[in-house]
Length: 101
Image 1 (cartoon, rainbow, N blue to C red):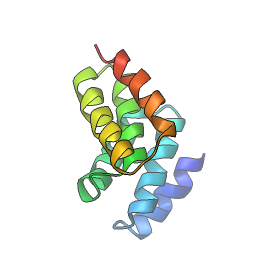
Image 2: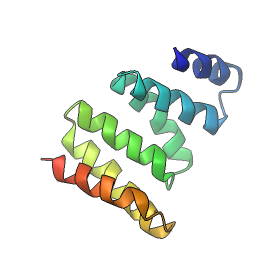
Image 3: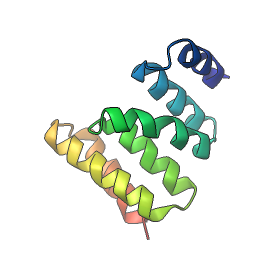
Image 4: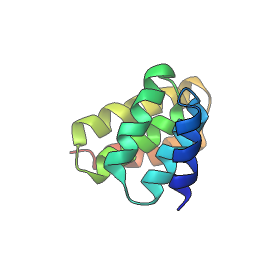
């Protein structure tokens, strides 16, 4: 599993945000949303405008039906998308926001 590769890399370099992000992304892709959240949140704490990390965090919360947390992450992702001129993910983010009850 891809997550194992990044887990090992993160263990060797715990301050490496890219390894942390990649591990969280892999966990989410493998269906481990709760674990992905725990891995991604510290990366976002250090880099609060990391749009793609916020997007994945929002998706993970949505999977777990944590609608308030999903909305919070996705709203931050949307702001980052606008601030950083990322037009492509805006539609996806908006669609996900509409799923937050």
